[in-house]
Length: 131
Image (cartoon, rainbow, N blue to C red; front, side, top):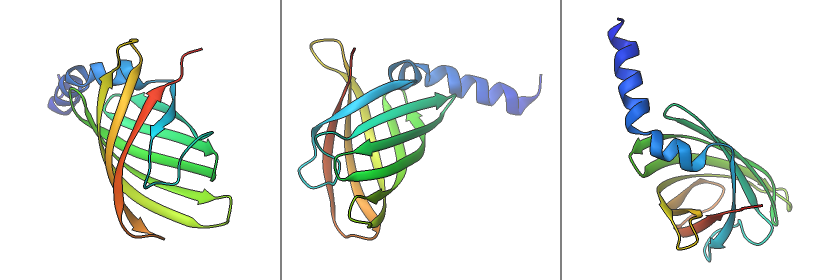
């Protein structure tokens, strides 16, 4: 067995709880006082092993995407970029924790900061949209 394959498989198995909670699921903003995403912004996540991507739009976000990785059994880190409805281009970083609320929906809690187009940062919370 190729050692690279073995290491990757072990990593993917260790991070599978995050993948199960995020893959092909949509999230809405629960609290993001310092950020741009808000009412109407929807995030759609895809997880492939320890790699994460997402697409988001709505509210003040014309289009945005994220790329990142699973860093632990319930933690992730992401880089994000977006184009706002006002034509601003912004980019930033975030570190998040994946959890569950009392209704059994997946929750995301992030600490984040801007890298380009704005300064500062904050904390934000998201909750899974269940149909």
